[in-house]
Image (cartoon, rainbow, N blue to C red; front, side, top):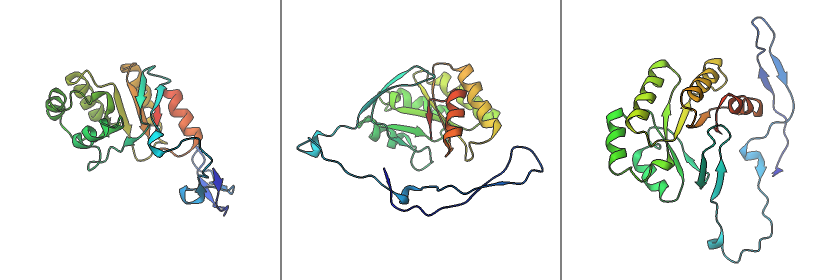
Length: 198
């Protein structure tokens, strides 16, 4: 990766204790628009020879996954059963949105979704009612092996605690968790029990 420009940006970070002045970070920050992925020579004769399939062993669930490391977001217009069916044909994952009912999950998983379940994660929030619904979905569809714990701000202590609680309750589930943007919080989530960070 090669930076395309290096205009410094400023980030204001609040200190963890009340009453403290915020810290201003002045080091260079890069965004997607600031980075160019530089091509290199290749021994491949045709793009049809390219394979983006990979094998992973997740650090906490210890489960193995073989497929394309691409995950459709758990937005209500993207993370649908229909999208999951299409992407599973290409060995891609879908984090299915959290608005489907337990009955909809049960019906789909016993019908058209039966072969797709290895490529699907059930999404949840962190509130007690969210975890209760997650438990009901996992009980109704025990073949599910992945969960996506999703919050807008992944820097809250409640989010980290939820990951720990889910890991303890379902030790063999592969946990996707986010949203965070720093390496420090990525490490915190992995150490707390997450396998995939978004």
